[in-house]
Image (cartoon, rainbow, N blue to C red):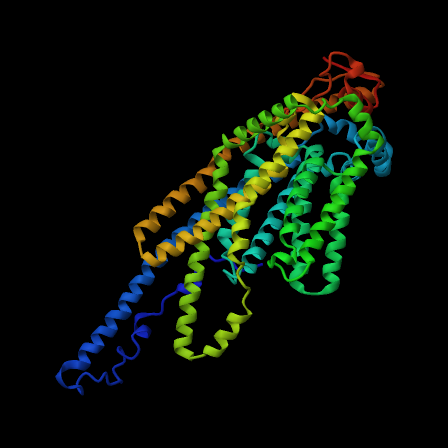
Length: 566
């Protein structure tokens, strides 16, 4: 881990007596009395004035940097506090909807039994079933710990990926830690709390296994591939390619939306990184992306051809492809992006990216001055040139333009594919399943943060060259207001999520104690009052008990024949 820096340590100025050389030492002759005509006195005055001017310039630069660091610290602390609340809410998670079926199947069938059941009779998601069996093997302990695990692993993975990318770009040897933590924390908080289904995205295990966990696995898989590439070791690269294939197969049988999004990005990056375009020196990136795509495709084929998937399609036959259905898909896609665009808090990802870019610009400017001062004092030009040759080479302009222009159409295309799949599987309301949006919302937030960092770095360089302190202050006020405001906007949904989760847990515990007492007394039918949360299905929702799968799973979990309303 890199050191935490509230202000830039390289900009600490020396005391005035050290800056002015020997001017303050009475034991040294300044030469003023030896020069004729007062020339020496004039030169001495000009030197002192120049040093004082440089000190004043350093002071003017140091002030905005400290303000930037404090703004980033406020954002990091605020987002971190919200994420801590979300992680702690896992303690209050109680069964609902699919939880009831997962609980009794994991208890009665075991991990392998529930995996076979998913493959043969449910949906074919083998990886999903295996993880579900592991998670629910100790009743609700696993689902209670899962939110904290997701927050920690996703936030850490994004931080390490961002730091690795900034180091590899050659723009900053050591990225500023506090703005980087603020960026990753706010992006993670926006992903979990800014959407329409926060409970499902973070706290409801069946949804997080299918749609949130794949993003975590994908981030760490990419991080491993990058580390293998930078190591230069052949066996490490071969292991990374093999891991991409295996992880791709597992992800293909974990959740279809993420497999589609990951396939679109992997295929695009694999084609662009072919050596023939001159942006890479070997085929490692293309080979890794090809292995990932092959794994994802294999997993999807295994899922689609499974008996469980065929049974599910028979229960909900997809409508035939036609011009009308394609038009409806585009309308659903447009409504989805209207819903996302209506949440202004997502602009916080862009704003915190600008803060990071400004910090990078300040760090680079400070490093340039330090290197210049060091060369003047030690006259070590050869060492500086050698270090410059060893530094990472910035990407070419053509590659940079491609990296800037490609994310929006790729995200749009991937989200359109997700909407098409949701409409095929769930009908007209499929696009409203906000838990599935995570697959393309995370790339969107990362892209917004990256665009902000790029723009902030350019803006910081421009303001540094033009020496406009008023402009720098205005930028900090505007960007800081959006970033802090975006963080503050998440307080209300987190508060609502906390209230609903805790209140339901208390009511559920009371009802669970009563039901278990009645079962222990020999009751074969018990009363159950539905406790709705997160827009999810509760037992006794259907018009007939035979069609009420949630009620049947609840009865099996408690070991009774039937449940009914009070």
